[in-house]
Image (cartoon, rainbow, N blue to C red; front, side, top):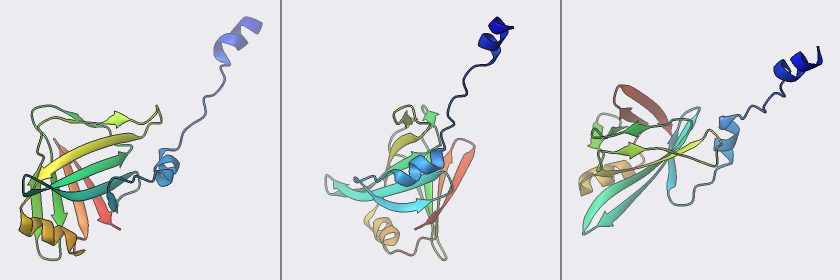
Length: 140
């Protein structure tokens, strides 16, 4: 009986709650803009060569690995939707210290008018579209 106990009575691994880890993350390189139950979006509008671009970071349990297709992001305002395509066609998540939480940086091109609308605090919802998957977030 002793050998069976050793084989089948393995110590239970501690279950990591990704929601708890995400709550404790204080990402300093962007502004918390939107979140859902398992992910947070940090954004920053920067300028490169005189043109604005949107720098986003998705932190949460979402793992993405897209090649040659990229993704899109939608900002839903009261009576309008701003749709932006990713600047790069490759989108990859990186796991944070084997925690089950992933960090996904994605940049988007936008014009000055779109940047002003996003910064106006009138955005109510944000949607990422990865291939056939849509993630929805409420602004904070």
